[in-house]
Image (cartoon, rainbow, N blue to C red):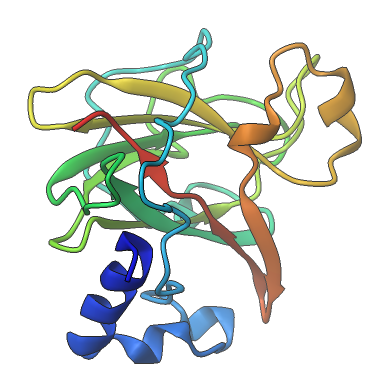
Amino acid sequence: MNRRRMVAASLAAAGLAHLAKPRPLAAQGTALPLTPACEGDARVTRRQTEGPFFRPASPAKRDLRGDGSGDMLVLSGFVLTPQCRPVPGARVNLWHADADGEYDRSGFRFRGHQFTDDAGRYQFITRVPGLYPGRTRHFHVKVQAGRGPVLTTQLYFPDEPRNARDGIFDRALLMEIRPADGGRLGRFDFVIPA
């Protein structure tokens, strides 16, 4: 049994099998497929620039829907070691543009962080970001376990016309996106050094 199946089995044993069943987006505040994408010795998630709009001291907030308009998106995943072990207590910091492609430069709209649970899970409920001039649609993320190194990267949407023209777009950082009642579900598992 590989680590991926072991993690899935342990989550199922913990009574979380119901999270894999499709439900309307409004009822999916905790929905997350059970099987992390990690397979044995996984590669560490690629780093990318944080961009010019990072602001330290984001609020502890996972529900960003109230920060503006736009289509709802629930972004979920795991933070894992290269050996597919969950990383509990890792800080996951998310920020992105609003529906008009603007970043909040004076406050904390569409900015927040949370800590992964004991299974290494995180989840943000937010809005689909607008297009920022010269870039494709994306999220900015920082992930850190304890006092370890910070992974700074960006996540991308599949099938975006601007992906091919964006100079820093990286296919390895594409989220899995699927439609759901009321919006979209996104998935990305971060792999950080142990």
